[in-house]
Length: 136
Image 1 (cartoon, rainbow, N blue to C red):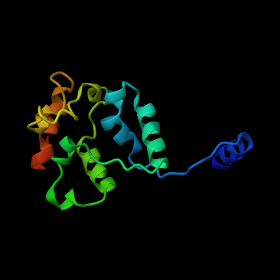
Image 2: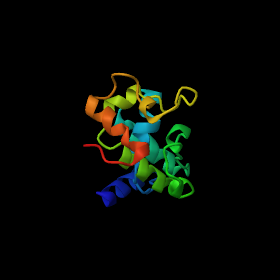
Image 3: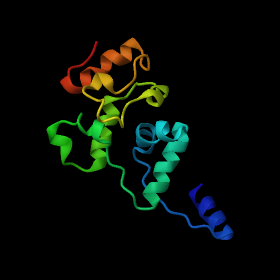
Image 4: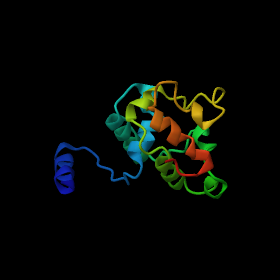
């Protein structure tokens, strides 16, 4: 598939850049989906394009407050990995009603999503972000 893409791009005179697709869906979902009103797939492709242009995708300040001390100074992909695991299981549509960029309003992990954006189970599991204790 890759060789076919490269051959077709060369034939058409289009440049092809290979990038690591790690965390592109999670980054796109959390940073760009709501902001631009696009699907998760479009948001992931936006992250891939930005990565090909040399941009780095750091955590939004609100999500940075959720990191434990041992991860704060690590590479941004390690930080995205931690946050992705913590927010795993939240329905994608909830991110359209999130408050990830409203730093002034954010005071706790309960306020990441607007009321009604999460199911009861998702809301309870979100409480485990800071405590680290498993929810049952």
